[in-house]
Length: 321
Image (cartoon, helix red, strand yellow):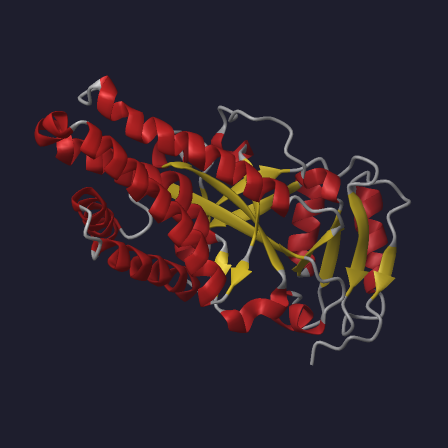
């Protein structure tokens, strides 16, 4: 997901085998997750009229900083589950596994999730015409839901764009302690196992370079796995949202040309080819929207040069209230 940043010239090749092995495992795991998250049916973005007009005009979604989401506690939840996993790993009888977990915990206590990174998000749902979504995100039922074709979210390249705002990754949100802990445990266990294996194979070098090796491995775990797991997990009580997240992640400096601010919140714009035929599958009008809402949407589409074949439909009586 993020570029690999933490290879260290101070490490001899024998110890570099540890981060290289973890990065190879992590890439395969993230590709597996990406494939499982790639949608096969339309996804819906619930919003108000002002935002709808802005999206249609710019062909872009505003992705807000994870630090400034409406409910920042959701990230604290996922990080808390991850910290519990690390604390259990810290009780290992294996010297290197124990100290690796301690190193990750120390980094998280100092930097929380962010460290050198920034993350920007926008949310869509697998729900079409869903009462709670209308109420929470569709301007209390007076707004709109944009149906987005799955074609927009198919991975189209393996490497990263130079422009950080273009590097969108799609992740299914998992809900509850069990699935959240399982993902953390998988990545922590693999990183700890690799660290231990290389550490015991090269004890002499670890006596000289052990602190650096543990720090590099801890950074790699955070960069390629724990951040992703925390950004795509929520408490079980939110399960009915069926949320899918678009995530743009990189180091701070990479976002400098793209970072904007609105009402005290940092955001970037991520463009999508919305005017391409079939990109927008439909626009739903909220159940409590004004009587002329459909006409206003048709006027927006005409004014911005969208295909006139995009269906505009009223919600089927699923009241937000």
